[in-house]
Length: 367
Image 1 (cartoon, rainbow, N blue to C red):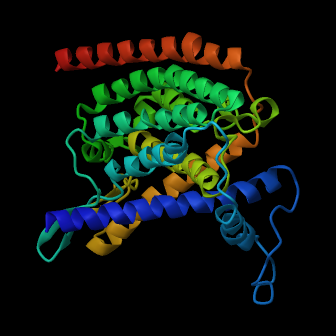
Image 2: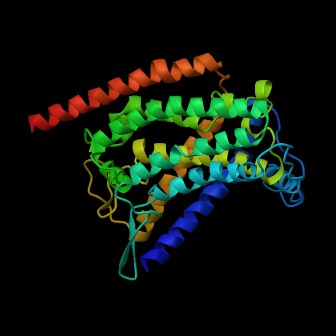
Image 3: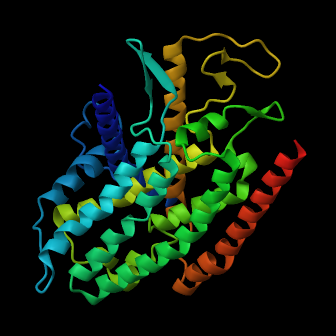
């Protein structure tokens, strides 16, 4: 029974991530149009008769994917056919399955059985996530090498150097969060954030670790390889970077992996720094209660719905935020990119980790 429940949760999470990743294509098209003061996608509107306006859903969610998946799957001469075919899957797989360890709710009782709203219940879920995040670079390197194209190879080399530079700073900042929460269990990290700071503010990680939040968010945006960190695939220098020689469904897979990474980064930031599924002043047992007031009891189903809804809203907010950053900031030069990762973010992350460890030690000795 446990295997069945876990399988259903895992399948549901994967489908939600893939669906949201596809929807982000429309958000990016319309978001960029708003930023640049233009209409955006507005053609192929088969529902124009039924709706007073056309939002361009048909363009981005049906016409464009149909065009990509019906294009010829071209493999250049001299390319490694097996590596060329595997690279898109290797890039997409870690971004999708990483979300399985992120809790999207507390617990629910069904037929006398307590079900944890987390696809994979791991005591070391934090290590699972950090390990899978680092695997995405293999798809990039494999794509550049297998394409037999100098520009694709240069893009993959840039991608691997960029990920190493920013993953170290992000990893050190994540160690600071482990020191704060005292556990590697993602669900317990979220429950730790269920209290109140100074009796008023939610005890979210961002209020305890604002420096770690900024570093993790910045490094996460760098992980997605998008502006201002899109050096591995910048069109003005490398055509399309590591996937220059890809077309059709394989190109769509690479594009989908970029959006899946946005969802993954949003879920990680939400879980570690913004309470995950926690709703301010809402307790799973006592109900809703503002500071100094008697809690108001709520049905268990409503509490669960509010918690899952809060998690979804937070993830969507950070997804939209990353897309806004992509269409707002200019691209870094490559030397600026490396300097930011190694000379600024890395020392700051080390100092923050040392300060966190010292403060926790002093607090424990003072008890």
